[in-house]
Length: 107
Image 1: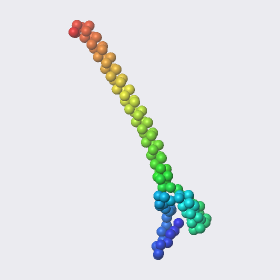
Image 2: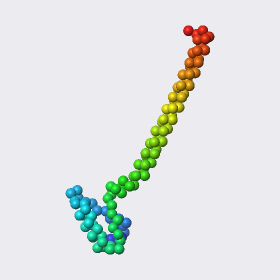
Image 3: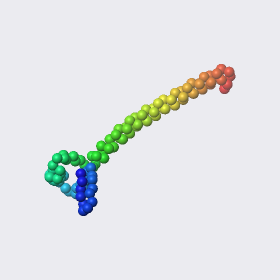
Image 4: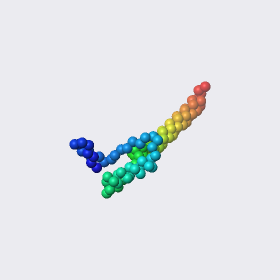
């Protein structure tokens, strides 16, 4: 799409419109569609809202963050199981050590 401003030509792949806060969105979109069809009758209108486009861009990152969070939780759970196993092993070893000392006459 080319726009001419004076002697300069600009080429863009998109056009941004800022709506006022109290604007009637369906009415404005209908007007935009009518103007577009009058200017470019063979090119279909492909429109969307900026907040929706940004949300689509970050969907992948949100999914990756969820997967990484799940794996982080799994890693912490496995680490806790390992610490529990080490503590149980040490307690059992100390129990045997105390039993041997008592057999040998320790107080």
